[in-house]
Image 1 (cartoon, helix red, strand yellow):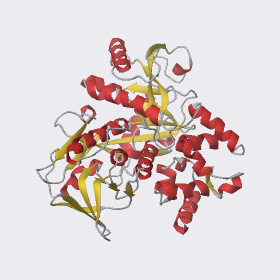
Image 2: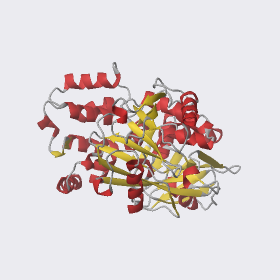
Image 3: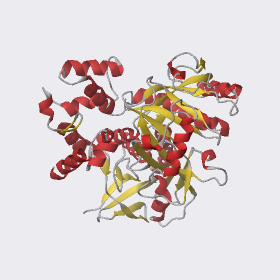
Image 4: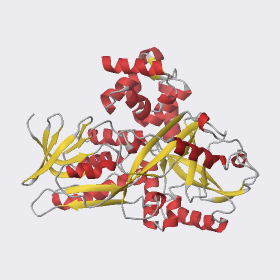
Length: 492
């Protein structure tokens, strides 16, 4: 292949890499992104699915991190209203742990450190009244409520990649970089399958593999990486209302219990130190038992490992500041610039969290701007993500419009498509006049038309890509249904 020259090459197709690619492409730059597997194939599809400030980080005096994350929460709710939704959290007071006055002060700060974006403020609760206290043991009589947001993390990554592609970025999945070397004023990047591109700047957003990717350049790592595994479990839903819980634990950690996909409760997360990143990360029996015990301290009905219907785990790559426990390690990000005089620049991304990916991408561009003349201004805080231009009435207005245009769709099907694709749900449905026009259904309401869209527009290749990253319909799919989908994809 002839060598191509790009302004920026990005290594890593997680939320940070895709966020950088979209930001850079929207500033008029020619961008290529390399991902050795699938988009959001690792850490970025294994979060707790929350867009939040991180209430517990206030104990670490991480006021700047929390304030920035709270401001980003409001931004993401505005630019991706189909994917980022408000969620009420219930924080029961546990006698013997953090006192009520401390919780009250923490929640006051949480309400005022950043942009609340119209979300309700925190308030005290009498848990002996109302549905919030009904699932809890009787000793939990008082508590607080506050607001954050939740999202589908892997879909947030996918729509950033789609947005980057729409702006001209070249997104190359299943393409592993094996070498990146400086040659005069350009980076020469080679992939395992023999592709060679040249780039004026390189961004290393490889997450847990950031220093492995850096080794491909021949440079020494400027930062250590602290690898912390976080595991989650899903069980049949534990209560009927639509609020989430945040539970304090005796070890200083907190565990969330979150309504998930109508039929489940999602519980997480853990903090387990790891020596090296692994390609396949799984929740251990010990972590599953820990999460069950943590929530069983609060819920009347015990949660046991035999109730678990799904588990997942991801590795968070935290900037290593040395010492301290995994739970106290900072979730802030560090951006390092290597730019010797006359040589093409390299920015490496250490740490970060899904909530602050957009601001992180702006930070990367701030470091590269002096080395890339003519770069346009920051823009992503106001421009909707793909599908986020919902039109009059917002999300509910979109549901009404889809019901008018596609009256034969079930209410649940419309809502799922609207939540996944926003205004672009019409691109999935096209000119269909009846369910039969959408083709064979593989599991539930997942049809051939939607699968084809995911292949053509969102880089899906396997049943796992479709069932677990582009959607979470794998929770309902039988092994036979998954196998039929795999055969369809291979035949395409």
